[in-house]
Image (cartoon, rainbow, N blue to C red; front, side, top):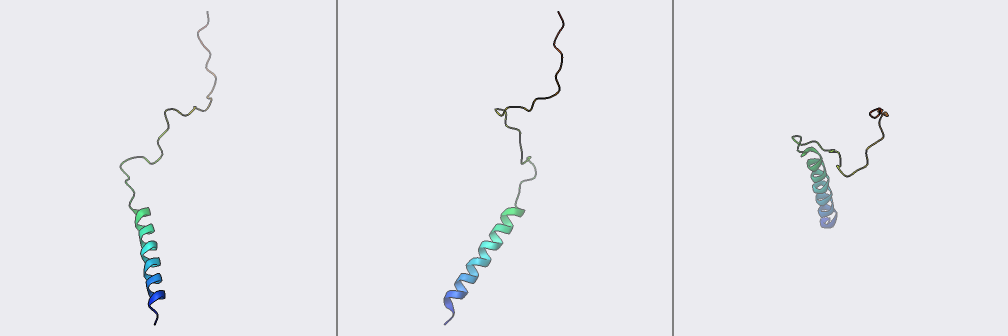
Length: 52
């Protein structure tokens, strides 16, 4: 009786298909990487301040 390997094979294929569908099912209307408003910004070019 090969019931246990059959069940494991079906579960493996179902998990594999679920992973593939979760990768494909991405909402492209919103950008994935949004800048974090609390993160420190990288130092840019130095701009001179007002001269007094």
